[in-house]
Image 1 (tube, rainbow, N blue to C red):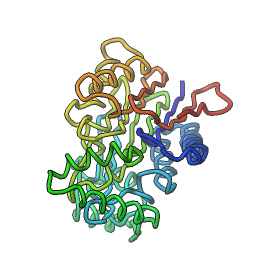
Image 2 (cartoon, rainbow, N blue to C red):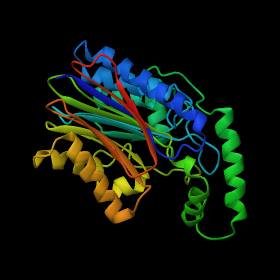
Image 3 (cartoon, rainbow, N blue to C red):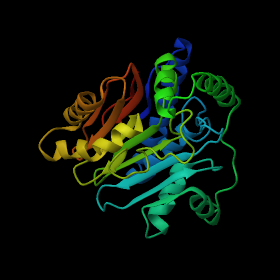
Length: 306
């Protein structure tokens, strides 16, 4: 039973007119992945789906990534093969177009699981990835406005101030994109993000931490979105696949994972998508929005939702 699901990030989309464009974006991404999945490769399907989202400036990954406190796009991405537990990730990578593709090269061409910062960039160049500026004018404008408000809050700690900003501007949490697919033989999960707006330079979230924001094994795969520190502390992607191992399907496991996040860290924190090794898809969130789309064998059109 072939299956693929994608997400465009959990949070709040403040401008209602953006919603149709966001839904069109996740639909395009899931179809890009589905076309690859029909050729038999979950790895190719996940990479192509995430690349489509990285190329869409509406989403916080690749082109259109949010900016750090000092105005840079530091991106994270990861991909995991469930059948072999092979994994590749990049953390804090800059000036590449498709972080997910670099992460795949880490998985396939090195003995490591994660490369970070300048080393990740050097590896990308070695693999033939050209210099690319993912920063958009819209993100620069947002960065200037939010940073000004952050500075005006006073001398309290960064994350306390950022929490106050998030309450005023919940749209800044519209973070991360991801895909999970089953090709009949294995489940593969992939995630890509620019992180959270005004993050501390050098901050690494859950996305490239295998088991936190991205994970797959022989029973299921998961991609998380939301406040990365929550997923890190709960090792949420791995925890979600553990629920499948204990007998839940992807839908039940997704809901259980989000219930866990809500219990410990409250609402408006997390979203998750999953596929299990029977081809079931699942998704859940405790935020207002989480754009998503999925296709399964036998469906003529993708199911799309917010």
